[in-house]
Image 1 (cartoon, rainbow over the protein chains, first blue to last red):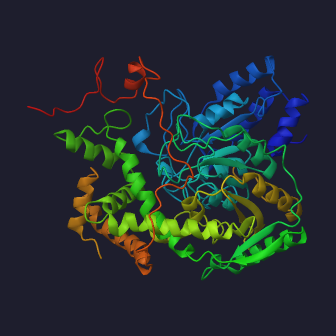
Image 2 (image 1 turned 120 degrees about the vertical axis):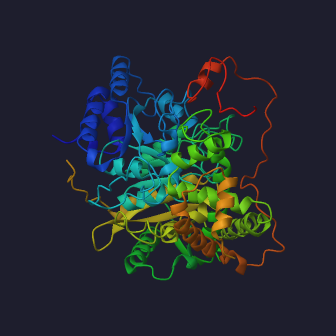
Image 3 (image 1 turned 180 degrees about the horizontal axis):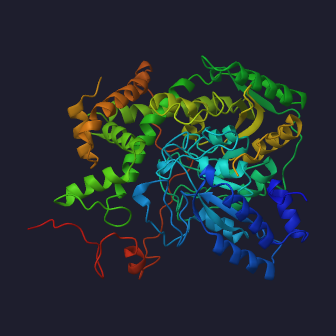
Length: 485
Length: 95
């Protein structure tokens, strides 16, 4: 018998619609997989009883018109879920039970899906390896002792190990695309403002964006359709007409112009990444796309800019964790100020503390102009690089990451070497653009590698189409063997 | 520039995070290497560049100044680590 959990979301939806499988049996299959995959440490919370009830409810009164009919889904534990603990991977939210639902997850449930559980992530989404989570590091199903990427590492790992048919993550500097690349899956960071930020635990508000993580490009289009919406409750939400990305998927890319930025060929980049990029270019060229050499001259300044802007916003956003209104509260301290200081010291992990301190410093009196204002100016130059080039090209092709998945503990001692993981993903967040990471090949150890397609603002359909055509002609097949149960 | 231990303790005070004395050295080292990395930006002349304050091509939407919820005190207090019936409770502030 074929294992339903091996299939794509689209195939699973078809099986539900043709009554080949009930929502209840589907849900039970995933629960069985999750129970057998504790070693991967992907889940912080499971909601099996509730999921089984929802599945039975669907089966008794099925609505096949919905985008996600009777589909169980696990989501990153950064999305607030009503009456279900939401930790953001932090000790400071160890006991936090939201009384409201994030807009993005509500959209998924309104489209027929229901929650299987909450997925591990780097603490407050600050990390590139899922090693900063209070709930322990997640293991990449690609290999024992390998990181799954971060911050949406629980999401990438759970999807690659067939513990959920699709999932969602958030991407502030690469947190969807880098883990997608490390686990051989598809990940999309949408245009800033396309998916509501309401109810998502905030990290850096001018960069944070939720997006889908899926097995195929078609699945990615289905999920984006279900999760995106205009939302009054998010002041930066874009008010636009609903798009039907999956229905409008086209695999013809003849005549499209694809930019190849020379600045993405960085020093010491492994040969395999370069070869992968060449392979990607050839596939698109053979499909009739035109390759154009372009220059994004400020690329090297994107990461330093990010490490001012993101910590500055984080230090402000995380000021709310004071032990008074929700979350952990220290028993130590003789007065209010000491209670704050001890609460935050006990509640936050080392990486979060580092970033709060960086942010506090760059915003502090006397340093604001030298750091924060400077970063805002360079951010303008980075955005302009993209604006200038998007008058000449339809999309830009780059590698997703400068390496494949690395070993647990390999980069934790040197924060800057960890930050360099996001060198190809961060510029897109600073410019607010959409970008799709596609699994495209393997390195010599057999670990997956990804390529990134960057689009104009709100041009998701086009990069999904290019991705769709690419996927059909790339022949990528994940080689994950089930070693963990 | 480099950050010394005293500066870091001061910033930690501003951020309301108590820092373990034993960890100050490694924190100083980490933050200095991060700032060295960040300061690459000084290579760029940005005198004539406008700072980017929003990446959206739209201005923020003002909302109507009206109450859209209310009577949710219980919900708001539910997650509080210390409360009495109607209020959050903090350590004594005034003598």
